Image (tube, rainbow, N blue to C red; front, top):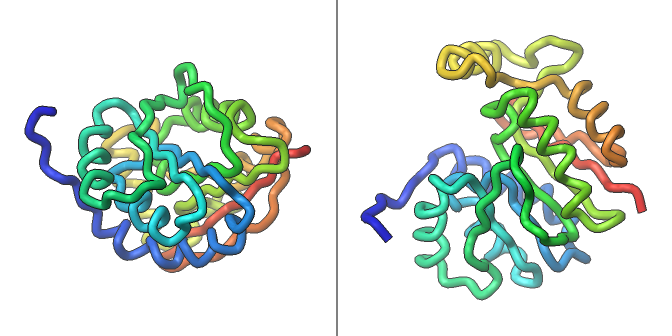
Length: 200
């Protein structure tokens, strides 16, 4: 491996425990979770340690895998297999999982990529499995806070195709893909965890 600095995200440190508290309500019976867009790998290490009964499978685009591998290697946890390369707009790995999780991904994706992610979920999620999506979302085309509006402006200045997505659109996509909303959890700092279940 070429020299890679171990990546770090302060927001991951800040939100990992509130997210864990939500996920704990859903993962008792799960054996395998696929994380879409694992980023630095920090969430994976925290959640794999918190839920030793399940395999936490990281994934991301190829350029992010070296940093994830560093976090996984330092953690040395038996339920953290090597990360998978996954670009949601390309063919997905031939795997099946009891649950899927993704954090802070939708708002950095284009609308087309988000749609591709939702279309991909039923291909790797077992019937009755859950998909949990964390991040900021708009409701009825309106920002939930001034800070989210500023964040959206920053995102779009960096990449015009990105930006905070509307809950209603995501929920419509989920229904088209055979999923129904289980719960919309309010989280700190104007974020949410949306949980859908794939039909049996």
